[in-house]
Image 1 (tube, rainbow, N blue to C red):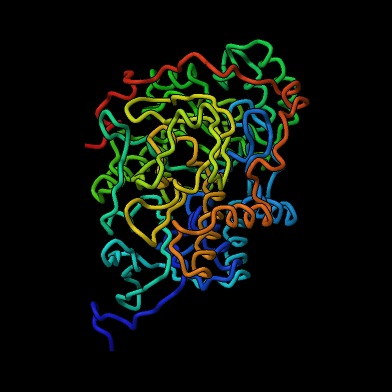
Image 2 (image 1 turned 120 degrees about the horizontal axis):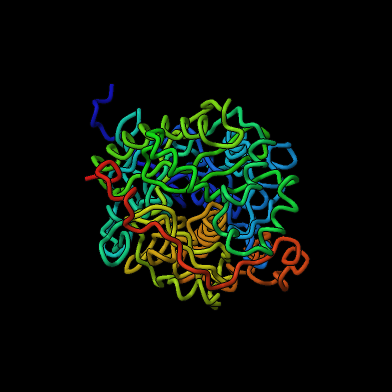
Length: 498
């Protein structure tokens, strides 16, 4: 029998992907489809990570062009074929949103991993990164069978926290430059029993102000009201007045002053994205544990708000709580290039482009409520952002890519993370075949392979969708700043993890 700390036999795989969230899934599938022997390591018992708890935003840009295609779009097409997702709902702020059956998504993710021939290792935690000189050579894991050494030609860090890189001595940063604080996290939960008709009538009331982005612009409000009855998916970011009334009445004590959430394509369901704590350190077990305890305590407050104050919410009931907290920002691994807010806002193009993004810079305030936002132009994500700096054999994708605090606030959404994953998985397979470091592969070969496999690298992007712009409208590029930084709701003791 093996003892508790016994080392099992060492195994070698050409590509090892750590983390099976949105980026890790596409990285592993792409590596395997492109001929590499691939192992996907995940500490949960299911695939998809946070992508299995949310509606998905980020497929389109602010000109309503689809900028993310390839493998992420293939996932959605298969969800549509199974009748398990809404159509794209174009959106004036988030560009587009798609509501999915989150549990079916877990099934599909497992199917597609198996179809690609990816080897899975679930309920497995990486405890050490193997490094020889300037090369990352593998990881040591622990699981039910014991401790095991896994070596690889290429390791891809899709942990979201940059765990592999950090344990391998690779440079990383965390939070905003001034104080190191990261975006506020959220524990998402789903309500059933919403009266859709009453909810939509409430959204039509300008006094309630269900969506702060469009309220200052009468023409945009009118366009939205013309189509809201037919909208299958409705994003909310408002109801501030009702929330303040509930707070004053003692019905609500959450450090979030707007109702952030999604009326899903299921007629009576609402996805609540409004739990919030400040001061999280996502690399500290004590801080993470404290955050979970506080977030669970906020769920009853928000349920009470729905029942007592929300239009159509009187009969709502709790259906499920996400199995994991949504951490919007953690370690960012420093790579060969650091993607900045300037790059994103100005739509910078790069010779080594491997994916596009068009989602606005969306910062859930690290020390306040609501969000800071900047509209963007379609931008390129360069390959260099996905190669860990000063080492060989390590790549990354997802919210731990090489970017600034502001940069990752756009690239962190699910489809853009998936597009990054497709790129690094494909690159890793090409590197293995060529017996090269990922840094040294032919970038044109990588780009052509991605294009052949459906990815969008501007080759078919075309011009703005003027029909959609006329029907839905567009926000001005430079919007007035939102309020909510260091306000009373975010300065109470219960708002902060200490």
